[in-house]
Length: 530
Image (cartoon, rainbow, N blue to C red; front, side):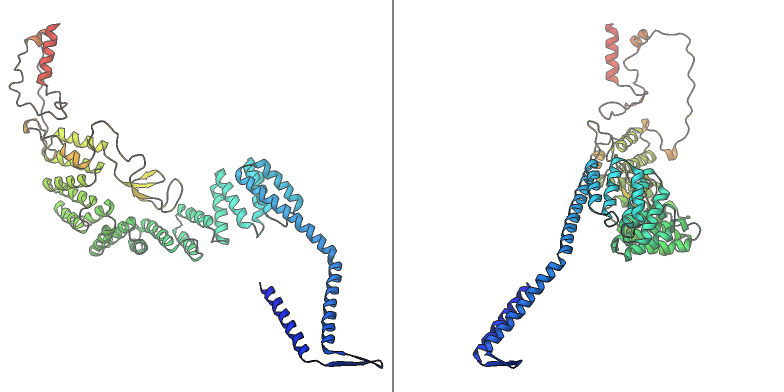
């Protein structure tokens, strides 16, 4: 577009010049070797322009003829290079599709058209073809050759890293990743692999330094880098908690500033502050974390802050947590457990049932069974709550790559991935076994619980249970036939045995000492018929 504009400007200027000369007529005289040459001004100007144009055309023709051999060679060279690049392109597409034969064919064609030292893509194509064909020794040789070339060093290290992981040579893979991360920290795969290897070996300071380099190189976003650094600081604080609580406290508090919802950092910070007898600061840290993410680990650390507290004191602290996060399942459960320890069964039952109505899970029903055992000792209701716990969804746990851990870990033991553990329901345990007619919802389970058995048939609660002496059975002097015993048995045999327990689930409890009167009468009638 610029050239066209310049051309138009030149034409306009030339036309304007000719018109200006034509408007001002005159003669030009030239004496050369005694001869007088005279002509009009417009003719002289036109002749001058024609001579300049002829010289330019003549120069172009001479230059074209002079450079024609080089132009021809360059044309054919470009054509050959284009065919070679076309072969490389076709070969790479074939390698990506898994067509090793076509990739090899295109590689050989490209080598015949382009020199391998001039185009490193030929080595890439040959390495991919070797990987597809299973010739891993040849592929490693080609990747090693590429790693020695500054232009293809990163690609060669990547290929060597993948091959080392395939063979299980984790130490070699770590060295390749470290080399790539040091020379090119902007490579995401190298930075991630080097970071994970340093975390696996517990080199937390080196991992934090590498993470800072990745942040400067813009490999990670600011939010992601802050989260990973908080995880590294938490892991470092966890190792320092026993030996140096002050340093562990500083690292954990720094981690909380970067990720306020990181539960392990809050727990470690609270424990470190408690070891320094700073109860007020520890309580403040744990309360702030509880407001953001109610977690059982935070509650246990908060309730056990002072070793000399009684069960009533722990109940008050649990109620303090509930006031910070009301209408929450974890708040209700922690208050119910503390009330059970303090033997305030009414409050414990009310909070546990409220938690069951909010979210039915295994821990809720087990807590109801413990409350029933401690308060009433009714075995029927205890078994009912235990059955509901077996069928209810499992409780959340620390899960990473399908593996469940009892405690939080900074890296996954399966894949080595950093910050892999999440507090959630384990895979494959979303619910218990499914049976017909089973009530697993909290509200339904509470409304369908069996009635309280009479006091005569209930066992004493665990807190007041005493050993019972069982009298020895008298020796039987004479055997009595079974048929005769059944016929002679009076109908009111159980008249003095006390009231029959009220049945649940449509039948009496599975207690061998309790018999069903209707079933007993049917057995008598059947035996008399025979």
